[in-house]
Structures are given as C-alpha cells and as structure tokens.
Amino acid sequence: MSTAGLIIFYYLAAASITSAILAITRHKAMHSLLWVLALFLHVAGIFLLMGAEFLAAVQVIVYAGAILVFYLFFLMLLDLPSEAAAPRFSAHWPLSVLAGVAFATSIWYARDIPAALVPPAAPSAGNLATVGKALFTEFALPFEIVSLVLLAAIVGAVVMAKRKTQT
Amino acid sequence: MGPIVPVGACLGLSAVLFAIGLFGFLTRRNIILMLVSVEIMLNSVNVSLAAFSHHLSDARGQVMALFVIAVAAGEAAIGLGLVLALSRNQQGVNVEDVTQLKW
Image 1 (cartoon, each protein chain N blue to C red):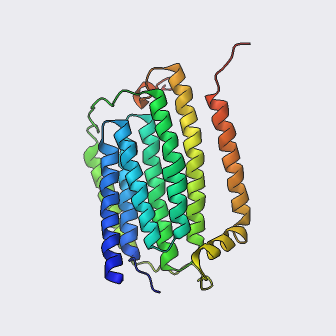
Image 2 (cartoon, rainbow over the protein chains, first blue to last red; image 1 turned 90 degrees about the vertical axis):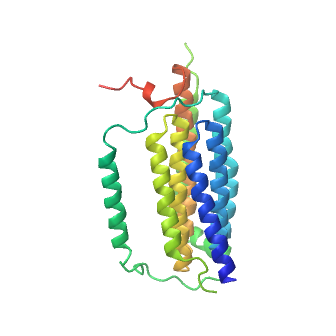
Image 3 (cartoon, rainbow over the protein chains, first blue to last red; image 1 turned 180 degrees about the vertical axis):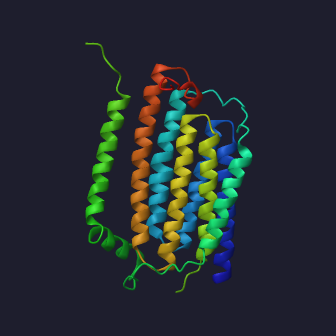
C-alpha cells in the first residue's frame, strides 16, 4: 500500500507541475485554462491521497466546477486575441535569479526548524466528522465571516459589472 | 494508519507550484491569465495546508484550506467584474494598456 501510494503521489505531483508549467506558457488563453483544469484535478487526487476527502470534493466542485467554468465563460464572452509574443523580462533578470536562489537557500535552511509548534489535536474519528466539528465549533466565527466576505464579493461584482446608465 | 505521503515532498510540490504561479503572474500580459496564476498560487498553499493537516493528523489545516477556497471564489468574482468593467472602456485586457493612473 505504501509503495503504491508513493508511486501514485509522485505521478500526481509530476503531472501537477507539468500542467502548471504548460498553463502559464501556452499562448492561447483557452489552452491555459484547460491545463489549469488538469492541474486542479491532479491536486484533488493529492488531497484524496492525504486523506482529505472533503477537501478533494470541494476542490473538484468549487474550483474545477465553479471557479474555472466562470473563467471560461468570461474568456468566451470577451473573445480575446491571443497574446502577442513579447520579451518576458527586462535587463534585470540576473538580479531576480539571485533573489530567487537566496530565497530557495533560506527555505532549505529553514527546514530543520521543528514543526511541532501547534498543540496536538484530539485523535480524529473519521475525517469528515472531524472537519465538520472543527468548522462549526472552533472556527464558527471565521466561518460566518467567510459568508460575509462572499456576500461582499457578490455585491461588489454586481456593482462593478453594472452598465452605467445616463439619467 | 500512519502518513502515506511524505510531508517534505508535499511542501516541495507546494513551493514549486507557488513559484510557477508567481512566474505566471509576473510574465502573462492578459489580466484573466494573471488571475488564473493567482489561483494556482492559492491552490499551492492549499496543498501545504493539507500536508500539515495530514502530518499532524489535525483537521484544522483542512478548515483553513476551505477558507482559502472561499476567498479564492470571492477573488474570482471581484477580479472578473473588474475585467468586465475594463473591457467596456477599452479594447483588449492587456495590463500594458491600462495606464490611466500612471504618473
């Protein structure tokens, strides 16, 4: 089980990285979005492998189902020309490479810091039940705030997308 | 049942996906694809949250990931509303053409 799980994990990780790279390098926006769809489905597989079934379901339903379809609608609505090929970076790219290497090195040295700073939770009894209990007891206030955030986003999107009428 | 997936590999995957999303955000010219790159970055953060949740067998990481998904949905709605308002006022949605606020 463990070896098979590892093989599946490394396949999913490699496929995610490949589809992410393809998603940000395709010139046609529609191809990019379809590669992002592949990325989201592979990440859902990784969640499933980590025992987070509810998160995997939300990933497929909300991310791949709702958000990505929303982007696809917009793309077809606006009918964009494909991106013109332009030089990607100016003459500053050695500096950015240096900054990236320094950041990666600092992350590499930070991996020895002990991770057990969080107090251990009670042993979980079934994943979905544990997540639901945490969501509605310990995280009840953030949960309600998230509903306010979504309401503000809906109202804001309607206000911004409304056509201005001359009165 | 112990952890199947090594947490270090998950964090590495998360870092690589975040870097790819950041690179996409900095290099794409189309605003919709920049927003999609932001979604890739948010998703990579979800991978690392789920990895820690799996490693510490603590459900709170998954709850955080759910909140991140909700904020991503709000960001998509607001961002695409902005893109729609922008595309009414000018042709195309390339960031290089949006210079009205440039000093």
